[in-house]
Image 1 (cartoon, rainbow, N blue to C red):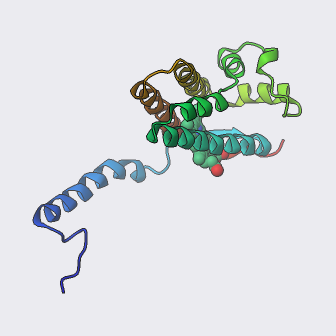
Image 2 (cartoon, protein in one colour):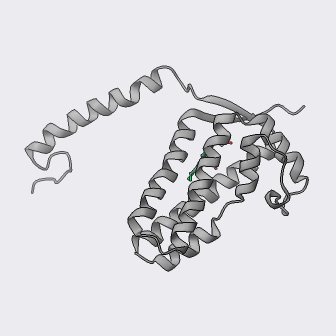
Length: 180
Ligand code: HEC
């Protein structure tokens, strides 16, 4: 009996796979040749851990939105977007250099204002702008979902949301700053 493999299925596959492998190599290779060239952002250990937790939450929220959209359940889309509604006031103030407004405070964080000021000092402006763009996109999803917006429109927001994740991850990486 002939062994079945995705690489030996038919002749067009035999031509396509090497071509694909070569193009992928050229796409990926330049980045690897120069090592990791992303900009390093140094954060104190606790702040970095907090950001990592936020990131996992971003991923969970994005998954929940995709899942709800894929099943065409617009009520669930509404609910997910409502739950993921960001503290826009905080990130707007952070990105624009304004003081932390009362509605942007995070009650669950001890010494919240000190954290806000450290983040402003440590995160470069383009980083903050991408975070702001991401959060504004979540806000749009929430508004559209609560106004019974079309599924396609919300999917376009979702693509834009994912664009912010990608752009920032390609540009930056974090390191833990040495303790002062
Ligand atoms: C403004 C920049 C920025 C944006 C926007 C951003 N990230 Fe991140 N993300 C980072 C950085 C920097 C790290 C590395 C964190 C570290 O190593 O301390 C990271 C790490 C992560 C991690 C790994 C967390 C861990 O356990 O170490 C996940 C998962 C992640 N991001 C998901 C997302 C998703 C999903 C989105 C979009 C919805 C997103 N991120 C948007 C900057 C960003």
